[in-house]
Amino acid sequence: MLETVGLDPVEERLYRFLVTAAEAGVVDLAAELDLDVGAVETVLSSMEARGLVRTASAETAAPAERRFTAVSPDIVLGARLLRQQQSLDWARRTVEQLSEEYRGNARRRDAGLLVEVLPNRIALREQLEHLQENAREEVLCFCRGSAIVMHSTENDAELDALRRGVVYRVVYERDLLEEPGMQANVAYGVKLGERARALPRLPVRLMVVDREIGLLPLVRHAGISEPTAALIRGGELLEALIALFESYWDRATPLRIGEDGALAEGTHPCPLNSDDLYLLSLLVAGVPDKSIASQLGISQRTVQRRLSHIMELAGAQTRMQLAWHAARERWL
Image 1 (cartoon, rainbow, N blue to C red):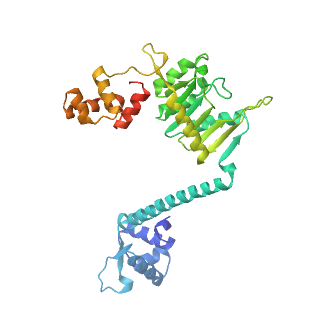
Image 2: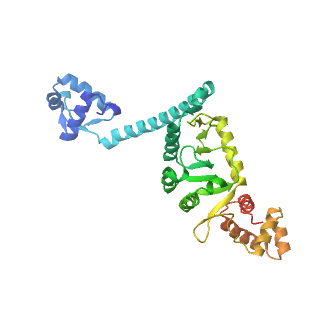
Image 3: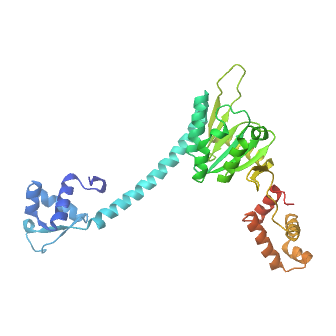
Protein backbone atom coordinates (compact mmCIF):
# COMPACT_ATOMS: atom_id res chain seq x y z
CA MET A 1 0.00 0.00 0.00
CA LEU A 2 2.93 2.34 0.67
CA GLU A 3 4.79 1.35 -2.48
CA THR A 4 3.81 4.71 -3.97
CA VAL A 5 6.12 6.44 -1.47
CA GLY A 6 9.00 4.01 -1.98
CA LEU A 7 8.46 1.27 0.65
CA ASP A 8 8.51 -2.37 -0.42
CA PRO A 9 6.23 -4.86 1.41
CA VAL A 10 8.89 -5.86 3.99
CA GLU A 11 9.78 -2.23 4.74
CA GLU A 12 6.11 -1.33 5.08
CA ARG A 13 5.49 -4.14 7.60
CA LEU A 14 8.56 -3.09 9.60
CA TYR A 15 7.61 0.60 9.54
CA ARG A 16 4.01 -0.13 10.57
CA PHE A 17 5.23 -2.27 13.48
CA LEU A 18 7.55 0.49 14.69
CA VAL A 19 4.71 3.06 14.45
CA THR A 20 2.53 0.79 16.60
CA ALA A 21 5.22 -0.32 19.06
CA ALA A 22 6.91 3.10 19.24
CA GLU A 23 10.26 1.34 19.72
CA ALA A 24 11.63 -2.16 19.03
CA GLY A 25 14.89 -4.04 18.88
CA VAL A 26 16.34 -5.97 15.98
CA VAL A 27 15.45 -9.33 17.54
CA ASP A 28 11.84 -8.27 18.13
CA LEU A 29 11.52 -7.09 14.57
CA ALA A 30 13.04 -10.30 13.21
CA ALA A 31 10.49 -12.33 15.17
CA GLU A 32 7.61 -10.12 14.02
CA LEU A 33 8.59 -10.28 10.35
CA ASP A 34 9.66 -13.92 10.48
CA LEU A 35 13.09 -13.03 9.11
CA ASP A 36 16.60 -13.67 10.29
CA VAL A 37 18.38 -10.93 12.22
CA GLY A 38 20.85 -10.26 9.40
CA ALA A 39 18.04 -9.55 6.89
CA VAL A 40 16.31 -7.20 9.35
CA GLU A 41 19.57 -5.33 9.96
CA THR A 42 19.97 -4.87 6.18
CA VAL A 43 16.42 -3.48 5.85
CA LEU A 44 16.87 -1.20 8.86
CA SER A 45 20.16 0.11 7.51
CA SER A 46 18.51 1.03 4.21
CA MET A 47 15.53 2.69 5.93
CA GLU A 48 17.77 4.59 8.33
CA ALA A 49 19.80 5.95 5.42
CA ARG A 50 16.56 7.21 3.83
CA GLY A 51 15.40 8.87 7.03
CA LEU A 52 12.46 6.50 7.69
CA VAL A 53 13.72 5.16 11.03
CA ARG A 54 16.27 6.27 13.59
CA THR A 55 18.26 4.58 16.34
CA ALA A 56 16.67 4.76 19.79
CA SER A 57 19.49 2.97 21.69
CA ALA A 58 23.00 4.09 22.59
CA GLU A 59 25.45 4.24 19.69
CA THR A 60 27.77 1.84 21.61
CA ALA A 61 25.14 -0.93 21.72
CA ALA A 62 25.95 -4.14 19.85
CA PRO A 63 24.27 -4.38 16.41
CA ALA A 64 21.86 -7.12 17.55
CA GLU A 65 20.92 -5.06 20.63
CA ARG A 66 20.19 -1.80 18.83
CA ARG A 67 16.65 -0.44 19.11
CA PHE A 68 14.83 1.62 16.52
CA THR A 69 11.86 3.97 16.30
CA ALA A 70 9.90 5.25 13.31
CA VAL A 71 10.33 8.83 12.13
CA SER A 72 6.99 10.69 12.00
CA PRO A 73 4.98 9.73 8.88
CA ASP A 74 4.04 13.40 8.38
CA ILE A 75 7.70 14.26 7.94
CA VAL A 76 9.03 11.44 5.79
CA LEU A 77 5.96 10.13 3.94
CA GLY A 78 3.99 13.37 3.66
CA ALA A 79 6.92 15.15 2.01
CA ARG A 80 7.33 12.29 -0.47
CA LEU A 81 3.64 12.35 -1.32
CA LEU A 82 3.81 16.10 -1.93
CA ARG A 83 6.77 15.70 -4.27
CA GLN A 84 4.99 12.90 -6.11
CA GLN A 85 1.83 15.00 -6.39
CA GLN A 86 3.83 17.86 -7.87
CA SER A 87 5.45 15.46 -10.33
CA LEU A 88 2.03 14.04 -11.25
CA ASP A 89 0.60 17.52 -11.79
CA TRP A 90 3.51 18.41 -14.05
CA ALA A 91 3.14 15.11 -15.94
CA ARG A 92 -0.63 15.64 -16.29
CA ARG A 93 -0.13 19.11 -17.77
CA THR A 94 2.47 17.73 -20.15
CA VAL A 95 0.11 14.93 -21.24
CA GLU A 96 -2.70 17.46 -21.81
CA GLN A 97 -0.42 19.63 -23.95
CA LEU A 98 0.79 16.62 -25.95
CA SER A 99 -2.79 15.37 -26.36
CA GLU A 100 -3.95 18.74 -27.68
CA GLU A 101 -1.02 18.86 -30.07
CA TYR A 102 -1.79 15.30 -31.19
CA ARG A 103 -5.47 16.11 -31.76
CA GLY A 104 -4.55 19.22 -33.71
CA ASN A 105 -2.18 17.28 -35.96
CA ALA A 106 -4.67 14.44 -36.32
CA ARG A 107 -7.38 16.87 -37.41
CA ARG A 108 -5.12 18.28 -40.07
CA ARG A 109 -4.53 14.77 -41.40
CA ASP A 110 -8.12 13.52 -41.08
CA ALA A 111 -11.04 15.87 -41.71
CA GLY A 112 -13.34 13.33 -40.05
CA LEU A 113 -11.84 14.28 -36.69
CA LEU A 114 -12.59 17.94 -37.35
CA VAL A 115 -16.10 17.62 -38.78
CA GLU A 116 -18.50 14.85 -37.80
CA VAL A 117 -21.76 14.40 -39.68
CA LEU A 118 -24.85 13.69 -37.59
CA PRO A 119 -27.12 11.67 -39.90
CA ASN A 120 -30.57 11.98 -38.37
CA ARG A 121 -32.96 13.86 -36.10
CA ILE A 122 -32.27 11.68 -33.04
CA ALA A 123 -28.49 12.19 -33.20
CA LEU A 124 -28.93 15.93 -33.73
CA ARG A 125 -31.30 16.33 -30.78
CA GLU A 126 -28.99 14.29 -28.52
CA GLN A 127 -26.05 16.55 -29.42
CA LEU A 128 -28.09 19.72 -28.83
CA GLU A 129 -28.88 18.54 -25.31
CA HIS A 130 -25.40 17.10 -24.62
CA LEU A 131 -23.55 20.26 -25.68
CA GLN A 132 -25.67 22.49 -23.46
CA GLU A 133 -25.51 20.12 -20.49
CA ASN A 134 -21.70 20.25 -20.68
CA ALA A 135 -21.34 23.97 -21.45
CA ARG A 136 -19.04 25.74 -19.00
CA GLU A 137 -18.97 29.42 -19.97
CA GLU A 138 -20.80 30.55 -23.10
CA VAL A 139 -23.28 29.39 -25.74
CA LEU A 140 -23.83 31.29 -29.01
CA CYS A 141 -26.99 30.58 -31.03
CA PHE A 142 -28.77 31.48 -34.25
CA CYS A 143 -32.44 30.51 -33.88
CA ARG A 144 -34.54 30.42 -37.05
CA GLY A 145 -38.23 29.75 -37.54
CA SER A 146 -39.82 26.35 -38.27
CA ALA A 147 -37.79 24.13 -35.94
CA ILE A 148 -36.42 20.97 -37.54
CA VAL A 149 -35.41 19.06 -34.40
CA MET A 150 -36.34 20.85 -31.18
CA HIS A 151 -38.57 23.85 -30.65
CA SER A 152 -37.14 26.55 -28.40
CA THR A 153 -39.96 26.02 -25.92
CA GLU A 154 -38.70 22.43 -25.43
CA ASN A 155 -35.10 23.43 -24.71
CA ASP A 156 -34.96 22.78 -20.96
CA ALA A 157 -31.18 22.28 -21.21
CA GLU A 158 -30.75 26.02 -21.81
CA LEU A 159 -32.72 26.93 -18.71
CA ASP A 160 -30.59 24.57 -16.60
CA ALA A 161 -27.39 26.03 -18.08
CA LEU A 162 -28.56 29.61 -17.42
CA ARG A 163 -29.28 28.72 -13.80
CA ARG A 164 -25.73 27.45 -13.30
CA GLY A 165 -24.23 30.63 -14.77
CA VAL A 166 -23.59 29.83 -18.43
CA VAL A 167 -23.87 32.94 -20.64
CA TYR A 168 -26.27 32.61 -23.59
CA ARG A 169 -26.16 35.03 -26.50
CA VAL A 170 -28.99 34.26 -28.88
CA VAL A 171 -30.07 35.93 -32.13
CA TYR A 172 -33.67 35.14 -33.14
CA GLU A 173 -35.32 35.49 -36.52
CA ARG A 174 -38.35 37.74 -36.21
CA ASP A 175 -40.58 35.09 -37.85
CA LEU A 176 -39.70 32.74 -34.99
CA LEU A 177 -40.82 35.33 -32.45
CA GLU A 178 -44.27 35.30 -34.07
CA GLU A 179 -44.75 31.59 -33.42
CA PRO A 180 -47.19 30.65 -30.59
CA GLY A 181 -45.59 30.76 -27.13
CA MET A 182 -42.22 32.01 -28.35
CA GLN A 183 -42.31 35.52 -26.93
CA ALA A 184 -43.23 34.28 -23.46
CA ASN A 185 -40.49 31.63 -23.73
CA VAL A 186 -37.82 34.14 -24.77
CA ALA A 187 -38.95 36.58 -22.07
CA TYR A 188 -38.51 33.86 -19.45
CA GLY A 189 -35.00 33.13 -20.73
CA VAL A 190 -34.13 36.84 -20.65
CA LYS A 191 -35.30 36.99 -17.03
CA LEU A 192 -32.89 34.12 -16.26
CA GLY A 193 -30.02 35.99 -17.92
CA GLU A 194 -30.17 35.17 -21.62
CA ARG A 195 -28.90 38.02 -23.82
CA ALA A 196 -31.31 38.01 -26.74
CA ARG A 197 -31.41 39.98 -29.99
CA ALA A 198 -33.46 39.83 -33.18
CA LEU A 199 -32.96 40.23 -36.93
CA PRO A 200 -35.30 39.88 -39.88
CA ARG A 201 -33.31 36.98 -41.34
CA LEU A 202 -30.48 34.67 -40.30
CA PRO A 203 -28.24 32.78 -42.76
CA VAL A 204 -28.09 29.45 -40.87
CA ARG A 205 -29.05 27.69 -37.68
CA LEU A 206 -26.05 27.56 -35.38
CA MET A 207 -24.85 26.70 -31.89
CA VAL A 208 -21.29 27.24 -30.61
CA VAL A 209 -20.36 26.07 -27.11
CA ASP A 210 -17.41 27.54 -25.20
CA ARG A 211 -15.86 28.52 -28.56
CA GLU A 212 -14.62 24.93 -28.79
CA ILE A 213 -17.32 23.04 -30.66
CA GLY A 214 -20.05 24.06 -33.07
CA LEU A 215 -23.25 22.47 -34.34
CA LEU A 216 -24.43 23.49 -37.80
CA PRO A 217 -27.56 21.87 -39.28
CA LEU A 218 -27.08 21.25 -43.01
CA VAL A 219 -29.46 21.84 -45.89
CA ARG A 220 -32.35 19.39 -45.95
CA HIS A 221 -32.86 18.28 -49.55
CA ALA A 222 -36.29 17.75 -50.99
CA GLY A 223 -37.50 14.19 -50.48
CA ILE A 224 -35.18 13.56 -47.53
CA SER A 225 -37.13 13.41 -44.28
CA GLU A 226 -34.17 13.24 -41.88
CA PRO A 227 -32.13 16.41 -41.28
CA THR A 228 -28.34 16.20 -41.07
CA ALA A 229 -25.87 18.40 -39.23
CA ALA A 230 -22.13 19.01 -38.91
CA LEU A 231 -20.40 18.82 -35.52
CA ILE A 232 -17.32 21.03 -35.82
CA ARG A 233 -14.43 20.73 -33.38
CA GLY A 234 -12.01 23.66 -33.39
CA GLY A 235 -10.04 24.86 -36.38
CA GLU A 236 -10.48 27.69 -38.87
CA LEU A 237 -14.00 26.60 -39.81
CA LEU A 238 -15.22 27.09 -36.25
CA GLU A 239 -13.43 30.45 -36.05
CA ALA A 240 -15.27 31.52 -39.21
CA LEU A 241 -18.63 30.53 -37.70
CA ILE A 242 -17.86 32.50 -34.53
CA ALA A 243 -16.94 35.54 -36.64
CA LEU A 244 -20.21 35.12 -38.56
CA PHE A 245 -22.14 35.07 -35.29
CA GLU A 246 -20.39 38.17 -33.96
CA SER A 247 -21.07 40.13 -37.16
CA TYR A 248 -24.80 39.39 -36.98
CA TRP A 249 -24.90 39.96 -33.22
CA ASP A 250 -23.51 43.48 -33.66
CA ARG A 251 -26.26 44.30 -36.18
CA ALA A 252 -29.12 42.73 -34.23
CA THR A 253 -31.64 44.65 -32.12
CA PRO A 254 -31.62 43.83 -28.38
CA LEU A 255 -34.72 42.19 -26.89
CA ARG A 256 -35.72 43.28 -23.40
CA ILE A 257 -38.51 42.88 -20.88
CA GLY A 258 -40.96 45.77 -20.92
CA GLU A 259 -42.58 47.34 -17.87
CA ASP A 260 -45.59 45.05 -18.37
CA GLY A 261 -43.32 41.98 -18.20
CA ALA A 262 -43.70 41.20 -21.90
CA LEU A 263 -40.92 40.86 -24.45
CA ALA A 264 -40.09 44.12 -26.23
CA GLU A 265 -37.73 44.89 -29.06
CA GLY A 266 -35.36 47.83 -28.91
CA THR A 267 -32.69 49.31 -26.74
CA HIS A 268 -33.05 50.22 -23.10
CA PRO A 269 -33.97 53.88 -22.48
CA CYS A 270 -30.90 56.10 -22.30
CA PRO A 271 -30.15 56.89 -18.65
CA LEU A 272 -28.11 60.02 -19.46
CA ASN A 273 -29.29 63.61 -19.26
CA SER A 274 -28.60 66.12 -22.04
CA ASP A 275 -25.41 67.43 -20.42
CA ASP A 276 -23.92 63.93 -20.07
CA LEU A 277 -24.96 63.07 -23.63
CA TYR A 278 -23.12 66.16 -24.90
CA LEU A 279 -20.04 65.21 -22.88
CA LEU A 280 -20.23 61.67 -24.27
CA SER A 281 -20.53 62.94 -27.84
CA LEU A 282 -17.37 64.99 -27.39
CA LEU A 283 -15.54 61.98 -26.01
CA VAL A 284 -16.65 59.73 -28.89
CA ALA A 285 -15.57 62.46 -31.32
CA GLY A 286 -12.05 62.19 -29.90
CA VAL A 287 -11.94 65.54 -28.10
CA PRO A 288 -9.30 65.47 -25.28
CA ASP A 289 -10.43 65.86 -21.67
CA LYS A 290 -8.76 69.28 -21.39
CA SER A 291 -10.68 70.62 -24.38
CA ILE A 292 -13.94 69.10 -23.13
CA ALA A 293 -13.46 70.84 -19.79
CA SER A 294 -12.80 74.13 -21.58
CA GLN A 295 -15.90 73.84 -23.78
CA LEU A 296 -18.17 72.91 -20.86
CA GLY A 297 -16.66 75.46 -18.47
CA ILE A 298 -15.80 72.86 -15.84
CA SER A 299 -12.56 71.44 -14.45
CA GLN A 300 -10.78 68.52 -16.06
CA ARG A 301 -11.27 66.57 -12.84
CA THR A 302 -15.05 67.11 -13.07
CA VAL A 303 -14.96 65.82 -16.66
CA GLN A 304 -13.21 62.65 -15.48
CA ARG A 305 -15.64 62.21 -12.59
CA ARG A 306 -18.66 62.53 -14.87
CA LEU A 307 -17.14 60.14 -17.38
CA SER A 308 -16.58 57.61 -14.59
CA HIS A 309 -20.27 57.91 -13.68
CA ILE A 310 -21.32 57.38 -17.31
CA MET A 311 -19.02 54.33 -17.57
CA GLU A 312 -20.58 52.91 -14.42
CA LEU A 313 -24.08 53.31 -15.90
CA ALA A 314 -22.92 51.56 -19.09
CA GLY A 315 -21.09 48.79 -17.24
CA ALA A 316 -17.92 49.69 -19.15
CA GLN A 317 -14.38 49.27 -17.85
CA THR A 318 -12.66 51.42 -20.48
CA ARG A 319 -13.57 54.42 -22.62
CA MET A 320 -13.43 52.24 -25.72
CA GLN A 321 -16.03 49.92 -24.18
CA LEU A 322 -18.13 52.97 -23.31
CA ALA A 323 -18.07 54.20 -26.91
CA TRP A 324 -18.98 50.73 -28.18
CA HIS A 325 -21.84 50.46 -25.66
CA ALA A 326 -23.19 53.90 -26.55
CA ALA A 327 -23.20 53.01 -30.25
CA ARG A 328 -24.85 49.65 -29.67
CA GLU A 329 -27.55 51.11 -27.40
CA ARG A 330 -27.99 54.07 -29.76
CA TRP A 331 -27.44 56.67 -27.02
CA LEU A 332 -26.01 59.09 -29.57
